[in-house]
Image (cartoon, rainbow, N blue to C red):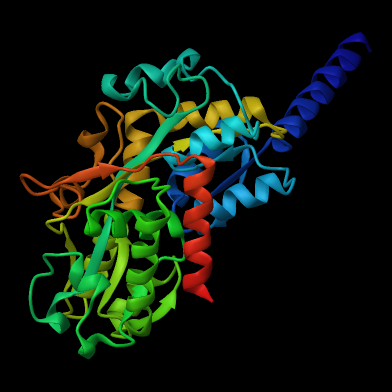
Amino acid sequence: MKLSTASSLIAALALSVAAARAEEKLFIYNWTDYTSPEAVKKFEAETGIKVTVDTYDSNETLLAKLKAGASGYDIIIPSHNFVPILIREKLVQEYDPASLPNFANVEDRWKTSEWDPEHKYTVPFHWGTTSIAYREDLYGKKLESLGEFFKPDSALSGRISVFKTPEEVVNLAHLYLGQDQCNSDPSQMQKVQDLLLGQKPAVNTYSSEGLNDRLINGDSVITTQWNGYALKGRVEAAKANKVISYAYPKEGVIGWMDTMMIPATASNVENAKKFIDFMMNPENMAIQSNFTGYSNVIKGSEAFMTEELRTAPEIKAPEGAKIVFSHACDAQAQKLMDKVWTNVLK
């Protein structure tokens, strides 16, 4: 009877542990089409943690939702220039990334950063560039200047798509106009507004989603785009004998780094740490990069990447290409940017 009782207790304990394991959860809030299903499936299989992914289309949407009191998310993936804002607003928490076992795999040059100098809040996720993608077969030539996007020919009326996010569009405008980012000079921001309003008649949509689809079906000839999505678009377009190219204009492109952070209201902090550590494993991050088409900063991950990704022209910037990383703007510059964007979208 004692043996039977002991066996029952062991069985009950095993069921209890299994039930607890089954109840382990992780909620990720990430950009649209930016979380590899294969990586998530692998993480779930290895840990027993059930992952739920919700998505957003801009840093501004993420920030607004958190400031409005949204809770329930355990990991968010903001761009580097929004990191100081999230820290300042106390919307995220410290989690000591350097203490995670796989942090040693982060490239040395990215173990510190201007947006998180002591590396208390972030781990790099992907990095890349923002520029212009276009249907080269419809456009009929190489796109070499941002002027072709901001001041398009009349033949392109209604054939241009633009991100619905002010920061990247305004920064591209700054590059074209030869201005500083985070500009708090009203006269210079007026020039940005005039440029964007002048472009508006050629714009068919302000959206950060579905841009490759618009290029492939021919609704758009030119669009703002991230290099990884441009790569995915080129591959899809080629199946239909269409040509999508990614431009490195003479004025430059915008560089960015997306990071893994833990919101202040996270309920599953330990599970979040497990996922972040999982993503710093070279093989796992390669799965993620192969899905998104973006570079990462995990040493050894290239060995697991596809040849197509390692050699992609969208990812391997041409010699001499100008890449300018964006910055977190102060309140005055941000206010002017928001005002310009509001006027453009009226």
